[in-house]
Length: 496
Ligand code: NAD
Image (cartoon, rainbow, N blue to C red; front, side):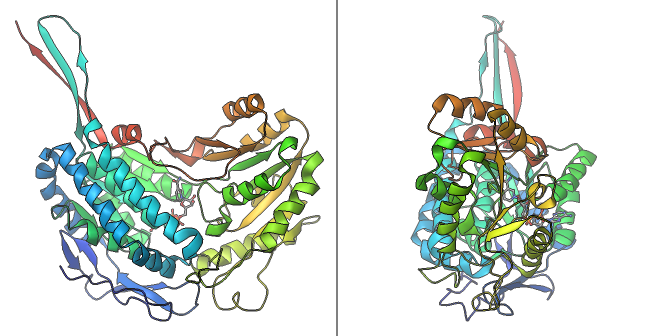
């Protein structure tokens, strides 16, 4: 099949109109298109995608339904092999993927887009490799009884993903659902549908048609239509806690299982013995500044022991002031643009509101200066606030931008109480050389993903998911795939 997605040569030229892929074919939505803006260059287009709605969702679900019986019967090892091949194909085109990804999301190619492309290949390989681990058990009910359990796929899965790590999160839904024997209708975000569509196109080299379908469109149209479709056996959603509630209600109406990977406002606790350059570098990593803070696991609340409050912030802000911000395709750029105008304005609102509060101060960053590149695209400098109060919006809500708040504490118990004082519970980062204190604190923290002395992201194979309002279910691991994308059946044979 001829690819409909041209190579990205530079930012000046977008990729034009990119149809969606349903039942192995390129599909448009009756002449309705949605522009995907290039956020690093306001007013220029990265591309356009069809504005799919109920009709396209229905077509995709019917295709997935028709493909399910044969795919379910395909041996799991064979299903897995398709993803090992897809990983190789993606890796062979990694530079093209990274450029397309930077064009639509505004992420810097050197610090984010290449890394996420390789993480995506890693994910595909992991799930392709564990395919034959979809095992059951034999239950010893007696000599005359052979009783065993098997894990069966659910049917057609509806997957909805956000824009902030679109390639890895789409690949995650695709390989977990399909390796387990389900078929999938995937709805990417309209802010970042291009690299995902390219991945789906590539996957069709190795998958039968109808097994994997993508419908582009808005949340209100394509998203809602997918949630309500009676043909689905499962909903798997990654996005905001607010939309997660709607997804859960839709699943409740039809009593189908649901997985939710939602938002966060994660703490980074620095103990007095970690007032050093290495920790400052990891805090920057944990805050995901190179992704403009647009990560569900961003450690956006920095809880510093009072004795090192000023000295640590000096180290941290010196590094952040030196950040190179600008053209995402430039190799020297460390930090690109916020994904779109709406998100940019939201981030600026949080900054403006905090600046207007008595006592609050931005040690670095703040509102964007009136000069290039800030006037060209949706760029915001790394921003660190002090003098904030824990009850303010900026300390409680997910800003989803490069905005970190720093708060002091004196006692360990106080730090833990502050860390847990949130309705979220996704990630946490702790910095200390004292192993006993590190583990004691890690066990007290109400979060699903805790790291000590490092700020990195999730590695395939780790159990990942949120406590409290950050989600339901676990993804990224074999166990997560088995729990979320298969159902057990118990079979007993009387041998007497
Ligand atoms: P969002 O909730 O606005 O949108 C996510 C997806 O849902 C998009 O595809 C969107 O089109 C769709 N959608 C929106 N409204 C819908 C509706 N009514 N019905 C059906 N679908 C609908 O989130 P976003 O702004 O794209 O992404 C940022 C959010 O995602 C943040 O809250 C972030 O923390 C969260 N996130 C969580 C994880 C995780 O693993 N926990 C990972 C990445 C992002």
